[in-house]
Length: 100
Image (cartoon, rainbow, N blue to C red; front, side):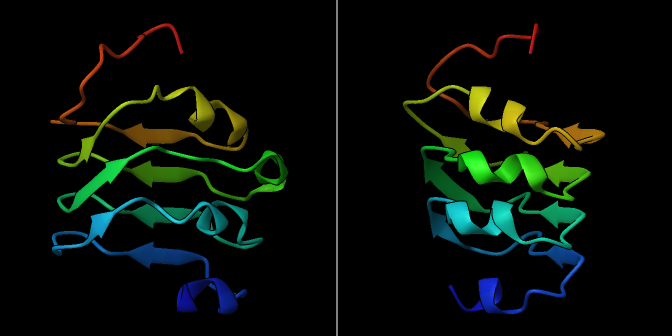
């Protein structure tokens, strides 16, 4: 995706669009990204977070009001700098383990 070439970005807010498909895994490896809002879209499929994302600066992640299917949220645990995670009204095909 084009946005991954904008390596100095610290905030991406794509709230309330009609994006579909998966979240590009490369977005989690952007070195200066601290805020990512993908809430209120039609994102689905797997959440894939590359192992290199442990170096990510991402602190705030909004994923609510999407339709993820067929996977768990454990990949988010790789985002070790995350301090705020919003999963409100997340439509999933599996139960969410609150012990994350």
